[in-house]
Structures are given as structure tokens and as C-alpha cells.
Amino acid sequence: MIRSIFTCVAAAAIVVSASAQTQQIPAGNLHRTVAPTHGVYNMTTGFEINAQSYRSGPATIFDNTDGVGYYFSTLSGTEEWIDSCAFIADEISGNEQINGFDFSYCSLLIDPVGDAITVEVRFYDDNPGFMEPTGWTNPIAGTIQNAACAYGIAGLPGATGVGISCWAIAIDLQCGFECSVPQEITPGGVTEFNGIGWMYMDALVSGNTGPTLGSTIGPGGPGTAIPGYGSRDLFELMDLAFVGSGWTGTFFFGGAPKTQATFDVVLYGDGILDTDVVNADAPDTGDVLCLGSNIEFRSGNAVTWALDNAGGTAVFPSAAYAMLVGTAGSSAGFGSIAGAGTTLLVDPGSLLFPPTPFIMSGAVPSVTTPPLPGLPPTVWAQSMGFNGGIGAGNAAEASNALRHSN
Image (cartoon, rainbow, N blue to C red):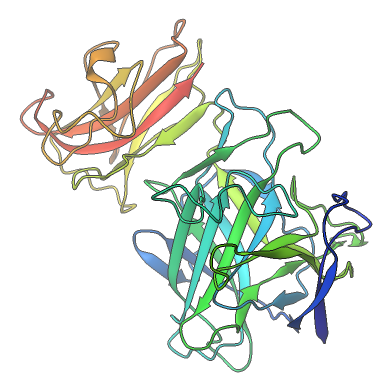
């Protein structure tokens, strides 16, 4: 079944600028999906087939998978397809933090080893539609196409059997790879859009792999699918082969109920309002701990802070663990004054009290506060593992920071 992708000026369900240009572009084939195989990709340990769980979430902050995915489409190795999403304005900081995501794709590329595909996923601060995301062509130095975050996910499988293989992949971003993007400025009405960019780079032959497409056919039949908040039946097509200006147009699949220009993706967050993970800009060798909290850091709450580690195993070699709490901090850090190989993220001049020791609860170090009194507008917390006593210069391990807004 041949598909055509159309540059949009107007479509039944979208409002379009009158200045947008119209043109029809043939763009290859639609392919029927097959039942997907599940896997998990950890940014530290790589891909595992048939893994059943991972640490991202537990809250779902965007879900565009209600429609039945009948078809997938392929894109070349230089193309980026940028889809839309949005986040309700419910955080004091104005930001949403993504700590994991699920996506689905299919491949025609024969890959008996199962490691031939690299997917690059980019999250953008904006995606106005009918133009490129802000700064894509002229990105800020140090960014990839001005993306807020970009993830190169290498070693994924192509068609490992006969014909087509489809895959449902869960990406774990916790413990060092979280991504923050803006929420809506004006609450309600989907007033601002974020972008999710997808590139599928086949190791051998370009143009054999691509995303599972959404549809309007949901659990209750045709027309019952509920799209993700801010999802639009269109996407921007960027092409790195066009030097200087990569935007080639806004595209959709013709409006058929089984083929929408939305790509199956679920985004996860921790579900704790006004608490953000802050990772060191340049992690050091001892920055291996993962600090989390169970509820909002609010007046009257008794909050439990607990540690994991970046490898996902409960091994804590230091002699003692403690929490540092202050009113200021920085992702650039304050040097290694806590200990060699560690990055101190809480401003040592802002500490509210001396380091608070953690108690080992089973194999996990944690501490629970008493009901909290009135708090300053911003509180930073970070944990350290110490040898030779809890004190300056003795830290051997450091965690991310948690920034609480009140």
C-alpha cells in the first residue's frame, strides 16, 4: 500500500497559518506492523530483550498509544521527524521532567545479530508547527539542533527473524539522564507545544526502519482513540542533508483512520510536584549515587529521602551516608571539597544544618524528616557517602541533587 505525505496548509482538524505552502510529496510505503517484542534500554548498561521492568516513572506524563498501531513508516538516515506533545502547567518551576519513555518501531533491515539500529531521540523546548523548532538550524553551541536533550540509543535490533520485526522499547533515564522541558505558560487549552524528534539510522542500508504510527481506532472502535495531550496529526520533517536549512515542510498521512501522523510514545516522570532532579554538568568518577524522595517537600510533610545507585544494584561501599540540605545549589557544582572524585551540588555556604546521617533500612540508606516547618522558597538536597567520618574531604560517593520549590 503506497502512502503519500502532504505538506499542509489546511486539514480538517488543525488550524493552519494562511501563509503556509501546499505541496504533495510521494514518500515511500506504509507497512503493516507485526506483534512487537519487548525490551529495555538503560543508558548505562544498554539493551536487554524481554526485560519486564525498569526504574523510570512511576507517573505517566504523556501517552500517545491509545490508537491501535496498524502501520509503520520508514525514514532515511538523514531525516528527523518531529512530533508534538504538551504538559499541563502544574509546577512552580514551569518545567516538566522526563525520567523515562516507551516507544515502538519496526524494521525491514535483516539483522540476525540484533544490534544494527541506532535511534536518536531529541526533546525540544518548543514545536510551533509549520516551521522548525526554535534554533534548529542555528543551534546554541554545545547542543544538538538546539534540543533540550538528545539521546543516542545504539545497538537496537532490526528484523531479527523473517521479514519484518517490531519492537517496543522502554528507555530508563533515571540516575543521571533525566530531561527537563517547559510546561505550558497558559494553563489549559494546549497553548504551547513541545517537540519529540526521531531519527532512525540503520547500520547497513538507510530507509528500512521507522516508528509505529498512531490511529484514531481505540479500544472502543473507530474514532475512540484518545491522543496524548498536545498531540497533533502532523509532524515537521527536518533533513540534515539540506545544509543551512533542514526544514522541508509539515506532513501528515492523509487523515485515514488507521494512519495518523503521530508516533507511539509514552513519557514518564516521578509524579512528585515541584521536585526536580539536578545532575552534575560534568559528572566525576564518584558521582554514582541516585537520590530520590517519596513525596513533595512541603510544610507539614514527613519526607523520606532514599538512595539507589547508578548501576541499579544495592551495593553501598562507603562507611556512612549523609544528607546535605541548603537553600542554593548549582549543576556546575562547587568543586570537590566534599571529597576527591565527587561533585558538590549544594552550595556549602547555604547549608541549613550539619550533614544529616542516613540510616540503613535493609540494604538501602534513607532518612525520614519530622513534619516539616515553614520552608524557604527553594531547598536543595544531596547525599554523600563518607569514609573516615562524615566531614569535609571524606566523601567518596555523591548523588544527584534534588531541587524542591515551595
